[in-house]
Length: 325
Image (cartoon, rainbow, N blue to C red; front, side):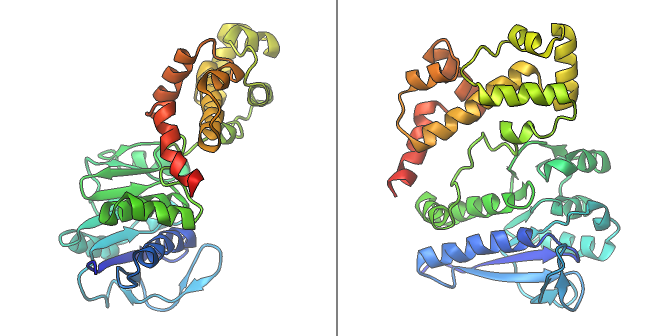
């Protein structure tokens, strides 16, 4: 029987409850898959006594507080809040985290929990992730951090930080894989209807999500057109003609509204659709490349590998077992 890993989750008032429940359920399911209910011992630690009220108004009962907790922690995760500004100025919490950091095997955060670790000085010089809506604030408040704005989760030594909300489950699944191997993590992913490795190159955004962020109506129209006509001529001149704008002005307006170039958005949209089809079917790569507007399969392979960090064939192998299961 494998050793027991004590996983403690620190939560503040108005915590995002899924930051707590999501990772906890991943660890609990891993214990079930291992046939060892003691594989993970889960604890909820509060910053104050009494019931913990989440941001959605629901309440949870903590197992202990930072004042009363005793015992060694193997993995400590700090859950976040939708209001990161409320996480500042928690001197007692910072001191407790600093003490725990000296003895835990792994220290991490979910979503804006990174602000608490950063305030305690535990992320200085490290690569970190947080919710996409808080990356700029985190970088501005703590310039010693290397904030990776689009990462689902980041491991830097024994420190782990994840993006927002459901990304905490991705991080927990990664920790399970570290502890018990890929096969156990894959079984957990299947049971919980998750990806063992989230598609999109561990990006927080898909092209469809990115298309919802533009304020300019003409840019939104072009994005919607791209997503609906991935096999069409989506060159910059063709899109400029559709937008009735000069290439220079179109490129400037598009980038200002979306943060990416028109060509970058087109490639992201095509590869987003490509990885979905590669996951779900055995469609030949040449046929897929043709349907997505690529002139040849080599260009498609290069774009796919550039975006996702893995070739289409290797990516397909990754998901073959999940389809078979």
